[in-house]
Structures are given as C-alpha cells and as structure tokens.
Amino acid sequence: MRIRSIVAIGLTICLLQIGVVYAEKRQTLDGLLAQIDKIPDGESSLSQKEQAYIKKLLKHEQRAIPHLVKMLSHPDQDIAEIAAATLRDCTHIDAKYLPDIIAGLDRGIGWLPGALGRIESEQAAQEAVKRYLLTNSPHNQEVYAVRLQGARAIPFMIKAATANNGQDYKVYDLLGHALEDMNPVAQQEAALALRKILNDAQSSTNLLRGVLTIVHHLDKAGLVLEDDLLELYKAKPELREHIDHALIGIPSTYRGQIFAEMLRREPKVTLLRDISEAGKSAQDAGGEVSKLLSHPDWNIRRAAARTIGFIGYKKAIPKLIEILNDSSDVKINWIAAQSLGRLEAKSAKDALAVTAQEHWHPAVRRQAKKALFHIRTSKSYTLNYNNFPSEFFAYDHFGGCVLICPNGLKPATFPALGDRLRKILNKPNSETDDTTAKNATGAKLNRIAAREQLEKLSYQREIIGYGESDNAEQVGCEENDAVIEITDEQLLEYCEQITQVPNVALRVEDGWLVGSDRGEWGGELVFIADNGERYALIQENIHNLYTLRTKQIAVAGLAHKSSNDGVIYELTYGLDAKWRVQPWRALPGAPLLSRQTLSGEILIGTFSGGTVIVSEDGNLRMAF
Image (cartoon, rainbow, N blue to C red; front, side, top):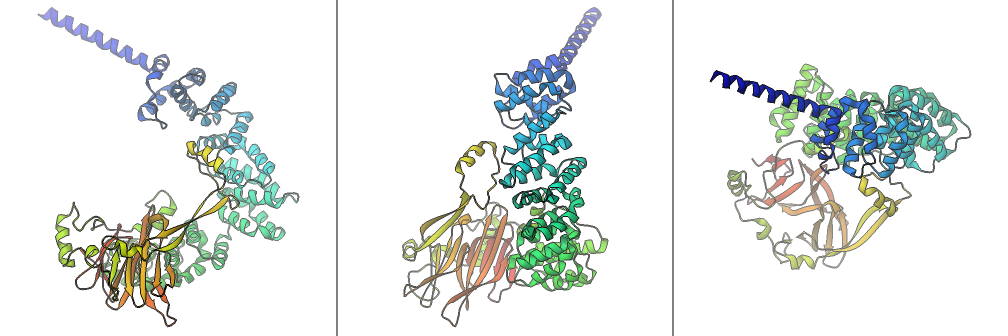
C-alpha cells in the first residue's frame, strides 16, 4: 500500500514538472510566436487577450522584432495587425527595418504608424511627418509617431509649413496639435525655428497666419516668442486676430487684456469658456466679464458668472451675491453659489447660509452648502470631468432625477409617485382633455386629439443645414473616423422648404399662437392671425403653450447631446398690436412632459432637473 502511494506521488510530481516545462515553453519567444494565429479576434480595437499577448511578446522585444517585421507581410491581415501593435510599443527598432515598415504602412496595417516613432533616424522622422499630414485628424497613430520622433521631426514640420505657404490651413492645425504633447526640447526647437519665419520680411501674410496657428499650440515653450509677436502687431496689423490667438495660447502676460478686448468686440459663451480655462492668468479680463453679469442673454450671463469663479475675480463678489437668489434663473443660482465658493467669498457666508436652507431646488441648496465648506476650509475645488468644456457647462446637468416619464404619468420604478402625481393634477390627462376646435380665447389644440385642426394652421419653414463641399474627401475619411477640417471656403449652406404642422396651438384674441418642436432640427413659436398675417416670434423648440391665469406662456427647450436647456417664455401683446416674447423663468432642465393642474399651476417634468411646479407669480417649487 505504501509503495503504491509513493509511486502515485512520484507520478504526480512528474506530471507537474512536465506542466511547468510546457508552461515555460509557452512563455518563450518560440512558444509565443507559435500561438499568434490563435490570438486575433477580428475586432478593430485590441482586446484584453491581445493586449496580454503583446505584453508577453515585449518581454523578448529585441529578439522578437525580426520575426514581427516579417509578419507584416503575412497573408492574414489580423496576424499582421498583432505584429504591428507589438512593434508600436517596442522601445527601439533598428533603422534597417524601415523599408519593411513602410511596405506594411502602404498595405494599410492600422497599428503600424506608431512604429515609425521607434526608429531613431531622420528618414523615419520625415516619413512620420509626411504620413501624418496626409491624414485629416490630429488624433491618430500617425501623430503618435511624430511626437515620438520629437526634435528629429521638427525640421520636416517646419519645411512642410514653409512649403505650404499658407495655402492649406489644415496643415498648420495638424502641425500645431502634433507639437502639443512633444517633449520640451522639441517644443523649444520648434519655437526658435518659427521665430525665423515670423521675423523674415519675405514671409507672406498667408504663411504668417499659418505659423501663428502653430504658435498657439506651443503653450509655455512659446513664451520666447512674445516680443516677436508684439512686434508683428506693428508690422502686420491685419494679423491682429491671429496674433491675439497665438499670444493667448503661449500663454502671454497680456492674455487677460487680450481676452478683455475680445469680449468688448463680441461677447460669446465659447470665449468665456476659454477665459475660464485660462484661469487666474486671465484675471485682467475680470472687469469686462463682470459687466456681462447683467447681459440680456441669459446664456452669456450664466457663462460670465461661471467665469468669475474660475479666474478668481473677487471684485464681482457683491454682484454674485445679488444674483444668488435671482428668482428668474435657477441655473445662475447654482453657478453663483459655486463661484462664490471658488472665490472663498467670506462676505457671502450669510447669503449662502440662507440659500443652503431655503432655496426651492435641492441641487442649489447642496451647492451653497459646498461653497460654505470651501470658504471655511480654503480647500480648492477639484474638477469632475476630464475635459474643461464639460466642467464649464456642468450647470446644464446640475442635479436631480426625472420623476415623470414622457410616456405616462406613472413611472414604472416609482409606482407611489404616480398616485401622488394624480393628486396634484386631480384631473384626467390634459394632453387629451383640454383640446377643442372652438375659437374661444384660451382653447388649445394638440397633435393627440386635434391633428386635423392643427393641419389647418400649418406654415412654411426653411430648414437650414451646413456641410462640407468636398464630398469626395468626406467619403475617403469615413472609414478612419477622421475629423474633417471645414474652412469658410468649403462650408456650404443647405436650405430645405418644409410644411410644418405645429405640435400645439393656443387660441388668443384675433388668432393662434402655434409652436413646433423638431428636436435637434429646431422649432419655433409663430403667431397666425385670423386675417392671414403670420410671423415668427422666436426660434426655439416649443414643448407646450398654456394660459396661466392672466399670462400666456410657452414651455420650451431641448436636451440633445451635452446641452440641456429649458425655459418658460412670457408672451405679451404690445401696443403696436404685435406679440412679444421674453424669458420669464429658467427650468432646471429641458421639459419632457407638462400638465396644468386643477388649481391652474403648471407641472413640468424636466430632464435631470426633477419635477417642478410653476405658479402664476413665477414661484417654482419641487413637486416631490
């Protein structure tokens, strides 16, 4: 019995040793290469299995390279792709393999461009720059190769910029993006080379315009060019806009002043976003930004309040306290609370404490409490998004969940809320109940119950779109998910005439107010008089129209991609016998569904902002 046990143990040990040897053999280069045909999964991106396999191959990097290079010509494209992806991640590839890699690139092997960056030769750098400039996007394997080449690529990049002589703006944008993530030595070399072009009296205006685009991407490495750019102001005043753009990018000590001047010329939300991203280095623009806190355009006003916090302009604290409880705009309340927290505004503590306790929207209360914490602790805010535009526009999705489903009153996941909702409404579904074909003031029509009547109120609209005129270029780039650079010369406007049947109509004296909502394609509010006169009041997606006791209001807005905007407009009849529209109350999100309650108030379910009730005097409160 003992002998049998010993034999069994010995046999087990033997088998284990064989298994270990076999496993080790599988990890050897020969073993790994023998498995390569079983690794590809046919997908365009690398799977976890493929990444793990490549990682094992890279442990034998220098011995594996000759085999991998040979596989670039393998008849199975998937095997060639695995070889290319491994070569891309090697630390160094001998220049003698460049012809093989070029052949593989000509074959269209997707993961291979990065391998050009692993060859330390001028020829490889030149090839990398050439192939990158043939693409239409700064986000690809080709730009990775150029960045890996670093300083070796700079002469070829400068040569390409000069040879183009400002004829193709895309070239300069691509070159600038490639420089963004290069090492500092390469960026400094680029700056010095670009200086020669900027100071060359023979440089054409078009070439200088393109070079200024590149300079914008140099970040701090471009500061050595600040004096040269200021001199260029004098020599080429027609390039002022492009010089300003370059000075902002490097970033110049005059950055804030430049931003201020740009705001004076034309205040824009996107410009305010860029000023915010510049942070405290743009503080000199604070005076102009603070003037916009009273701007009639609510979007600009919100962006200005947001910018004040990011650039640290404390002189605007009193105005931010004033708008903290502006009853017309819940979004600016949220923004003001956070900006006051970013400014560590001790003078705002009392106002924030009241807001934290009494504001009608819970997201604003939470933001006020958070601001008080930052003021008390002097702790800096952390960014919640990987890209700054998303961080800046966070106020479009500032809180809450949707408590009304667009397809019914009773949310499937919140059955109790359906009962509470019915108690608030205390009447049947108003979408089918408050429609009538009568011409009495206050009568409503909607598509569910009054399609024929609405068709009689149809009107003609122009749907305008924009597109790239070079359709052939677009088709060639679709397969590579390329970003196509569209210049003013290439941009075409497309116009289509349609007959629009309104979604909703509200009877008023002498005519109808009608509203349409085409989603991302827009909408409008139109007045159609009984005598045939008609005119548009506002270009906006109109969700619904109501008579709110003595007021006529339009509930409008859209949630599409990153935008989420909702607003209630007040409609008034002027002394000139024309209807007027003005924003009355901002909603915490785009309207998804609305109903008029038995008491006459309006209940609105919003996207990501919760369900609110609006009274005649403009007070808002949460429904739940």
